Length: 112
Image 1 (cartoon, rainbow, N blue to C red):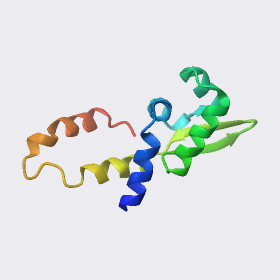
Image 2: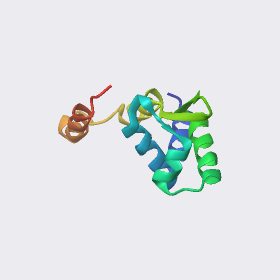
Image 3: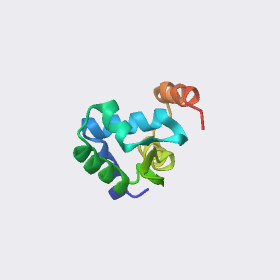
Image 4: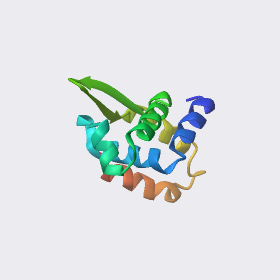
């Protein structure tokens, strides 16, 4: 991943509502959630949420699909994984105990 892409993705996550959207969509899994449900769950006005979703989509962190009259949003697991791997690529400096908590968390999160 190029650093410019990482910066774009990190910038997209650097806001409380957008981070909450990502966490909610990761929990929702591949089924995703309609925009209205996201807005209700996070108590965010629909017009504000729309702008937040567009920014996250533009950063490659979420995807959307149409289902009838609804738009369903899902976390882009590939985009999120790429960002995490980019950040952790040179971790540990030869000391695996530094990254052990991250490896354990990754093992617990294996669901896909």
